Amino acid sequence: MTTTFHATFDGEVLRPDGPIPLAPDTRVRITVEEEPSEVPATEECNPYGWLHFLASANLDGPPDWSERLDFYLYGEGARRDE
Image (cartoon, rainbow, N blue to C red):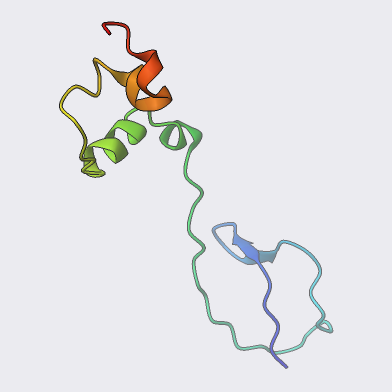
C-alpha cells in the first residue's frame, strides 16, 4: 500500500499534518521530498514586475503612441489636434 501525506520536521521527528491510515508500530519505508516554500507577500507584489514584463514584451507600434493614445484606443474622432 502506498500512502502520501504531508508532515513537518520539528528538528527531531517528522510529525504528520493530520491522521494517517496506519496501525501503531507499523514499519514503513519513507522517501522525503521537500515541498517548495511559499513566496513571501513582499515578493508577490513587486512593483517592478509589470514594468519588467512590458519591457520584455517587445511591443511594436507607431512612434507617437504616448502622444496619441486616445486616437489609437478610441479612433479617429478622439484626436485633439484635428
